[in-house]
Image 1: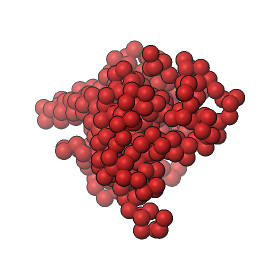
Image 2 (image 1 turned 180 degrees about the horizontal axis):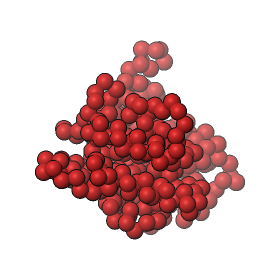
Image 3 (image 1 turned 90 degrees about the vertical axis):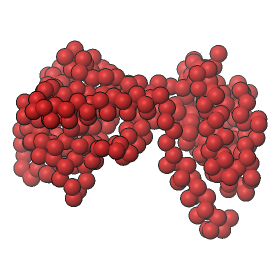
Image 4 (image 1 turned 90 degrees about the horizontal axis):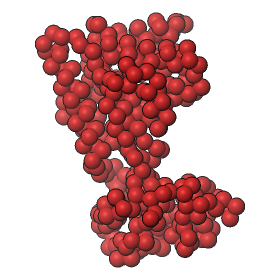
Length: 329
């Protein structure tokens, strides 16, 4: 295939990846964060510096939580994201470094806010500086992604310091800041470690999908994305068995499942096909995992014995269905 066709296919795939499907979780997230913002602005207008609250977004890798947050922050009509040449930032979003310490996270936030620290300081002083600069930028929400790393390999003393720092941000007398914490299910342990901290957060879980609850929507996604790529979709790939295999191959996570659908569309376009079929899903999974046909969920009859998360699998990697997915019943 010549470079011109490859460029054309790449542009289609980029457009598909940029699509964001609004689910119930997106709507819950939009409402929860919208309420946080509206409350903080109402307090500022009334001259009342009350304690702020937060939202905790929890899900497995590939569940779509980070994509949902990024889309919300980017498209919200009244939120100014942190930008290098703009002083005001309603929302500041940072990735928690891993491995991390409370001091490292504070330094990362300071750098992101545009105030890198040139001298060594204690974690307490660093977080006081973070609070100061959040106030200077009029920041209403601080988002920390991969927040579960705040509590990994922590002693009881270190965990107390993390909890107290988060509560201090929300309880600041001069400028309380709402928190959005997103991360893996381990994040629940951090929030449940202290009841005073936990009660300040509204939890939103991006739970695994299943055929029973989500099969119809997944079939619609296959059809819609195929049409967006100017491909007709074979009826067989929209049936019960095929959709079950698609969900299973996506590890029952919506984000990974959508990625797989897009990869199958790419395979169809690379083949010069005008329609999307099971063969393209076989090719997509094979390219992703490096597996042989016997260990491809779109080929093997007892496909739930395959762990779809593994690369370069052999027959020794076969598992029981309960190990990976309990959604097939």
